[in-house]
Length: 417
Image (cartoon, rainbow, N blue to C red; front, side):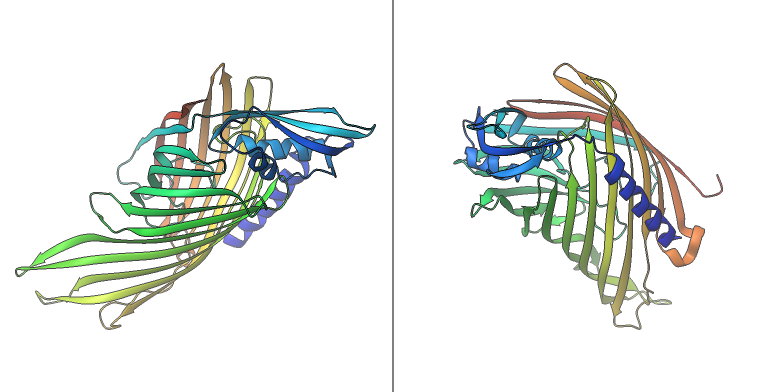
């Protein structure tokens, strides 16, 4: 079943890649790239972010994709481009006009989900793969190529083996490393959920644009927290959890903005490796005693996504896409006499469609999804859960930052419904 699903996804991705893009004839020789409107950020950062280079020949699709990369930067409100005549016939100057945010900008992302409180599905939010997961953030552009941020980060993994938590985070991002166009982010994060006693742990990410539309990135997350404390016979017994997640991602992205895109394609393949260590306690059968045990999970998985956005007019756009994930979780408990857990193979599949509309200075987006979660492939439909999800969100971006408000609904069904 999982192989058929992933095979179907591959064919859909190829179709999106081959037919989803607007084809434009002809190529242009870019003699020079000129950035206008930049005040805080170095023009070199903008040029490097496009992955376009002076003295090379590009198609209009390549140029549009490069400028779209600039539009998706967190400190840019908008960017557009124009081609001007160069010093000779057949040569052009690419002019990129940018509108920056204030040096100090903000993000507020307030969206909630309603539905059956007993649901087990994991993707409560509707973020696109690779999208920012901050619920609130303050950002300070430092120098001409760096940014500090203080945020409340919301971890919402689609895979069933990932932990879900909210955390305070402080970090720094550096753009155009060594003149290569690469970026790197370093964070310190501590969970703040009511069931989690926070520990300060590091996260890091680095990305490199390969072409105007393709990027490879690596993320490293190391999280540690105390899930709860058991009070037993006058002693406090803490159950501890630590996890380390390494994600390698290849992304093909030509979408025109970071929230509620109106055009473009997003393809993403992201292998994941996760190591989880848990110190816990288990009740011994026919006894009032508790025995301590250690559990180690070693997980290898992959997330894949294919989304496309079609503009219908200057203000209306529709979208469609598929997302899927597959993993193998090796679960080991010591001592073995306490409990035995077999390896499992969780999967998920999502089919979604959407509509968005421009509202002068903001944008409205409606989405609907059909989702299937399976905790272990070997049990077939016995542990399968299906859900229908719908959401509406409103997004506005200006020089002070980004505001996104929304509401979602989820209805969980069994395979026999």
